[in-house]
Image (cartoon, rainbow, N blue to C red; front, side, top):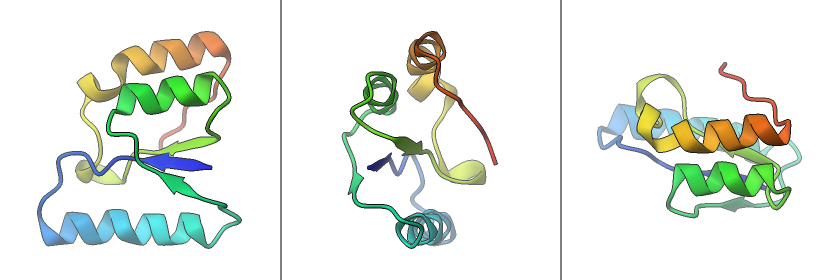
Length: 85
């Protein structure tokens, strides 16, 4: 199960970028996508094992540091791998 948030993007190009990324995620053995409304909560759900992946967008249309800072620490303490592509 993949979780995602649309962040602060409101421009069509940024929205298209996120939706294009989500399309690729859904085509690669993804069972479901969820949106919980909080980046930190998303990451805590991954740290607890309730979610498999958080997709935070590409380039500038994703999250800001304050959206994930606390969740990042919780995930690192739980042994999660955080990557940026």
